[in-house]
Structures are given as C-alpha cells and as structure tokens.
Length: 119
Image (cartoon, rainbow, N blue to C red; front, side):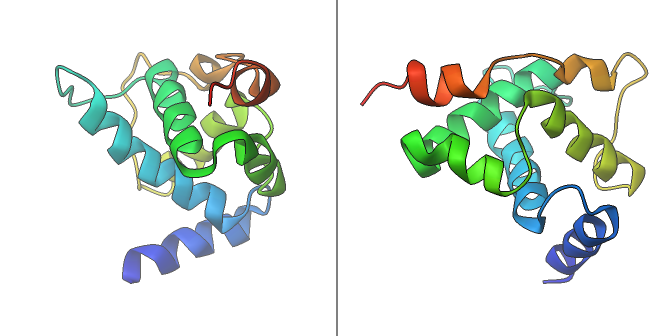
C-alpha cells in the first residue's frame, strides 16, 4: 500500500487531478506496455494515450468520458500532465526525445468515448 499513498500525496499536492486519475494513468502504463506487441522498454505519449483509451473503454464503456471528466481529465494533454507529474516525482521516467506535447490532441474524448463507441 506504500505506492498508493505516495500517488495519493502527489495528486493531493498538485490538486489538478483526482488521485483516481493518477492511479488510472499509472495502471494504464502497465496495461499499455503489456499490450504492445514488441514489449518496448519505453512507451511514448501517443501509445500511452491509445492504451488509456482502450483501458477506459474496458472499464467504463460509454461512461468513460464522464468518469475521466469527474476526475479532472478532459483531454489527452491532461494524461500528459499526469505523466509529467509522475516523472517529476520519480514514478515514471522520460526519454530525451519525449515531450509533454506528445500528448496534445491525440484524440478527442467525445469522439472516441461517445460518438465512435461500439457496443
């Protein structure tokens, strides 16, 4: 439980996103790394956003956009903000080629979670 407490503290201190959002992004990194065919040692921003999209749909279906919004996450850039918050607190690492901008406009939440949702 030590890990969870630290992530909670990070979320609380930052204040922009709920602890659930931070936990979800952390869980999503593991989920994404396991789903990528070549098992890379590093997952880039776009790949992580795609993994988070799939995980959110698995967990919440059409409610994904509502759940994420409730947690303060409204865009893929917000996923990046959470990632860089965790990088700053040594929970994740970045490559020199990585940028927060890798998370800009990867997809639109309304489009992927509502409009294009398939039952």
